[in-house]
Image (cartoon, rainbow, N blue to C red; front, side, top):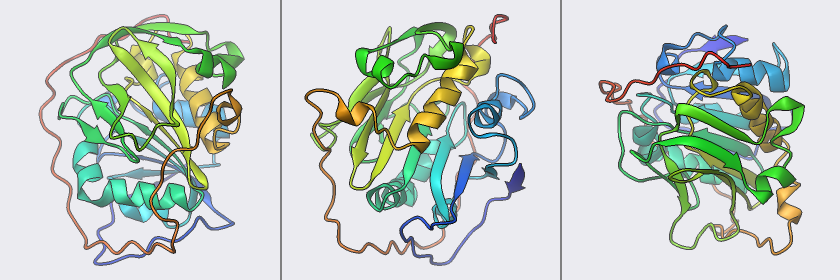
Amino acid sequence: MHRIPLIFLGTIALAAPASAATHIYMTGPGSPWGIEADDKGSPEAAMDFALGKGNWTSIFGFTIDAFANASFVYLEGGDAAGLAEFLNAGGRAAIESFVTAGGAVLVNGARNDSYDPVDAGFGLTLTGARFSDSGELTDAGEKADLDRRGAGDEWTGNAFSHDVVSCEAGTCKGAFSLIKGSEGSTLMGANFGEGYLMVGGMTAPYWQSKGGMKLRANMIDYVAGQGAVVEQLPGATAGVVPEPASWALMITGFGLIGAAARRRQSRPFSTLS
């Protein structure tokens, strides 16, 4: 696994994913929740479990640069990682362009630094301060086999999720809820254009009951495969996307706002597998 520091660019152009593309894990300037990569409850452990060690790249510090040569990007905005600032300062447009062109993206944010609703792309919106202490697969989640490899089909946590996910403005009408928490949907996904976007509001596997890491790995696997199973569910409709003209996204370089002080602490479960 390689770690790449945050890169500031004057101007860049985003193109369709390259054929020799990379799988990328991207988070804020530090490990979310202070969970080190070698902890079995870390998002990095789930990446290893899903894709294999050495088969993906890690980037610390959100940057649109990550989309330039990737086929799959996992953005982890847990705790105080600055996810909302990134999405509102060009990140959302970068995700939409990348997915429309055929890329696959997983956005997860269990935010402590900002609770205002934030559009993660195509109207899939994260709303914070909606703490669910449990979650269970929906029919669509079971169809997507998110319970495979012993992940189970329901989980608890303190908290299991901090954000709920909703489909706003009718632009993501083809999205499916994959996991329901006690406060609402905590995971949704859909095909848009040629690619796939999944958005979740869950804490790191470290804070979840047994099977949490395997669930995250299954999510990674599924998104990297572009959601081909759920797309075939009865009644599935394609999400509405922007015009598929050749998009070249020109974004002036920007700095990220430092993560705010944590508002809420969680306690780890001892039953993590």
